[in-house]
Length: 173
Image (tube, rainbow, N blue to C red):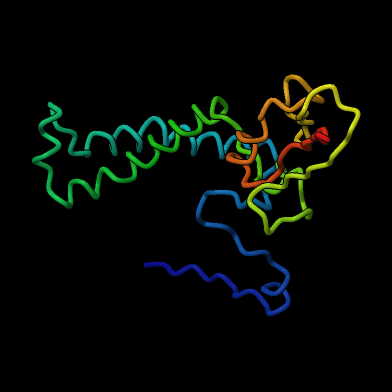
């Protein structure tokens, strides 16, 4: 048997050599942006093509609606992530069609006048009115503005405000 002599590297040679990677994969520092994007899409593709179908096959989905009543607690817990995702997707689908809610404080007209009263009403006697009573709108929602049509009632109910009409009375002598 013949032995082959290989001289050992010196300390200077060892310290200047870069270690070789034995994993066969490149790190993110070695890859460019295009390669990183490709890796992300490959991961997403694997999730959609392999892992998602395997997950769905393992779910305990009954054949009939009545089968849901026979599911055990552990089977319901396995269904919970899927049901949560379906509920979220349903909500996100109908959300643009839901009515927009206004913040209550944004709807208030009367911010400080007689807030302790359930409704603000002022009476003023004027001798030169043609009618005995005239109500003028202060909520800016009347269809017959400036005359009050009691639109403030709906406004007050919706917003919690307490605005009311200005009532002018003719003094009867």
